Image (cartoon, rainbow, N blue to C red):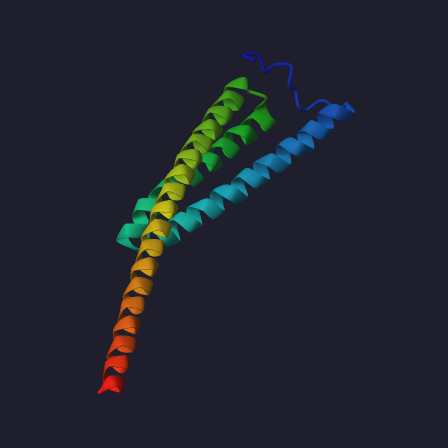
Length: 143
């Protein structure tokens, strides 16, 4: 896969024009996802704790936008170095996104365990209070 010279997207046969339209759509989608992720990261970074999550989102948004730019360069100049760089940047985006997803899932599971533990503790305390009230009412009824 070292040679990309066979992928001349400027040719006009039907399969290549389908490739060209899909390639252009992919570039537009990558730019949209990049902008969305950067904006999401910026809003998340408004707090100090949110910056822990927001800064990596901004970084991955920049990576996918850079990859889209490299693919655009390849589309206009047919330079295989730009295509290779685009794939490398896209790979970095997916690696960082995978790490963020795994860390987010871990934090979500920890958060759910904490909330579930808090709810069980609260229900147990309410149950104990209810039993104490029931016992005190039955004692007063005997007097």
